[in-house]
Length: 188
Image (cartoon, rainbow, N blue to C red; front, side, top):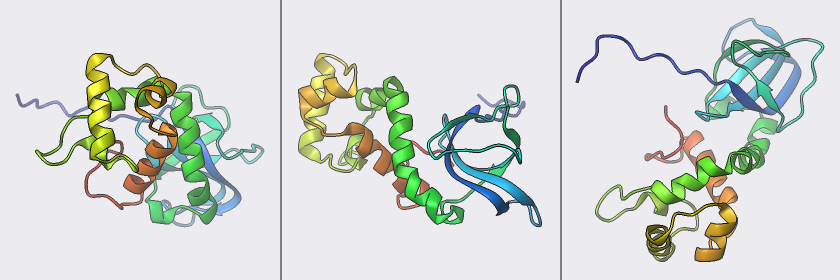
C-alpha cells in the first residue's frame, strides 16, 4: 500500500563516544571548528559528528544523550560521517565501544540469534557473522527451535559460540566500513 505521507525521520536519542577532539575541524560543515565528538548512534548504529560544549569533557565509550530533549553537553548533531572520515582514534575505539553497546543492550542483540533467517537457499544470515559457518549455523537454528536463546551466556552454553558480543561487533564494523554488500545491522 502506498502512502503519500513521508515516513517520519528517525533520529538517534543516544550515542557512544568514539573520539573527543577539543579543537577539531568539522568534516560536515566547512569552516566549522570547535570541540567535536565522533560517536556511534545507539539505535541505528549511525556514525555521527557532534558539536559539544566548550567546557565539556568526554571519554571513549561514554553514553551521551543527543536527542532534542535531554541534551546537556551537546550543542548540535552536525550530521552523519562515513567510516573513512573517522579519526584514527575513533576507528581504534569502534569495535570495543560496539562490544560495550551490545553488552549494554544484550536482549536486543540476542534476538538476532533467535530471528535471523536464510538470505538465499545457500546462505543463512547467521553465516555472515565472523566465525559462524554452516555447522554453527545449523546448531543455532536447531537449538533456537527448541527454545529461544535468553542471553549470550545461554547461547555460549548451548551452542559453544565464543564471545558473541565480539562477533557481532566485528560484523557491525565490517558493515560500517563498507566491507560487506549485505547488511544485517546497519541501514544506510
